[in-house]
Image 1: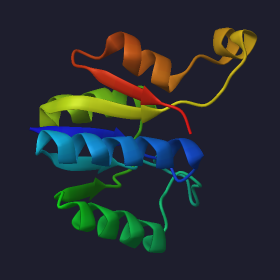
Image 2 (image 1 turned 90 degrees about the horizontal axis):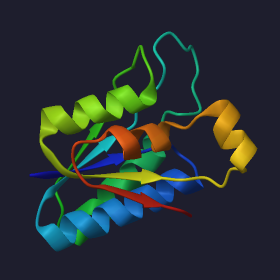
Image 3 (image 1 turned 90 degrees about the vertical axis):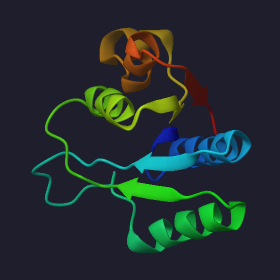
Image 4 (image 1 turned 180 degrees about the vertical axis):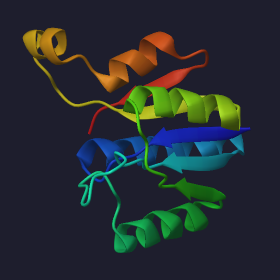
Length: 129
């Protein structure tokens, strides 16, 4: 089985990666890191740069966890991509980072993490930085 981490290069993504790495080590499972930019974006802050990828890989190796990074462009919503990847990989758990949002912000803007929490057919671990 696999632990799936939805990753973006920010504090929330770092928290998700750290928690996912701990889960994978504890469970004796592989780690799948999904870092999926929007399709067609010429430049995306969602993409982990090579030096960060090297750091994540080194941390996984040091923890004795096999890690695979997927950076394929997505066409639809991030939540749909995470849920599809979890199903395809038969992930035992999905790990996502949460950011602080006001109740009004949640109502107006929605949330990929909220959709994942509500729609996933497997456990979801949501962490804050």
